[in-house]
Length: 96
Image (cartoon, rainbow, N blue to C red; front, side):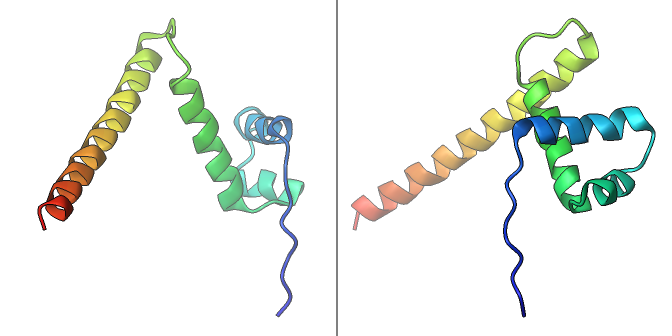
């Protein structure tokens, strides 16, 4: 079994690939095939850039701002839950 060498892509390439999907009218699979990357890779890049855009700050568009705030709330809830679990773990460990 041969291993494929891991390829590193620049952020500019990733942004251009994501932009191609949204502006070309072609599917994610078609664009991924044309660029020689995996469909799942391109889908992940789309999600990363969408989330980064949503969390980038205030937006003029009310719907976009609402999505950004909901995403931020979700992240804050996850962090809070993680801290609660960590606190409970350390309390349990120190009481032994």
